[in-house]
Length: 359
Image (cartoon, rainbow, N blue to C red; front, side, top):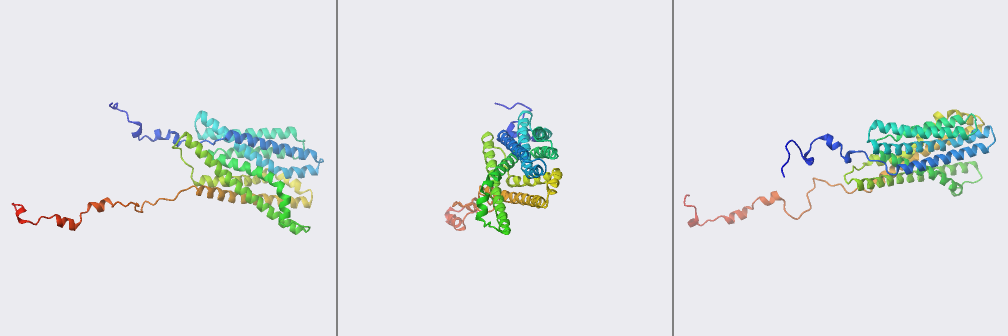
């Protein structure tokens, strides 16, 4: 069958636009984004409800302000993760229907974060008591959700999904770890003296941060591995993520915690100042809690990044050196082509009768 004139076979095409349109060059989606969005929204709802119960059950006035300041970090962290998760699900939906456009992806991510932020702020204003702290909590929560949506606008969606998964698992672990604080205080030698209690609290905090970082790194690595396997089932030529994606995914939960601390100190500054002005003990408590949150975020960042990177490195095979000769018993073709001088000499016919008559 002859080729039609003027047409080039697909395998011989040198058009870069045609290659860019192939599925292998398109960015990979984040699997399970809808499930992550539902889980993150459920966690945000639980944090908002627990904060409301704590504030409304306390006496009006100074106690409500103090409890609001203590509950603010949990609400902000949950809003940050929920905004990123919903924005990630919205980005997957828009990419599936309209293609992967950077502007459309960023618009959808910001829209998803704004939807979570406005919904959270509306729920706070409608269900919380109308106090001086309500608007601060509502505004800071909305800002955190929008910032989380902006983070999810990154092109590498699987890495963002891994960060959301690991961050959500870290937040759940922190709440579960609170049940083990009292036995750990006894284990680390907390006694009747104040110094022993302070030393035990430091070790408990470090243990919590270390285990949270390990969990974050393993969850990030597990999500990226699962995402890779799903991508290969749909497209065997799907591009693989390199080590910086695993490093960023493992460090992502720690970055989220530090980003939440920045949002708290900027947006919730007035609430923290009110709580610190109640008494000298409240001022010391707020300062100590802020320092502890920063230390926890740094520990989770480095331990999570190192854990994910080590887990990824264990899957790599040995490097192949092209300069090393192949381990083959067969001789090299160039050496086999060279004749042996002894064999050439044996082949020479020295009989004069058989010599060439012309010589």
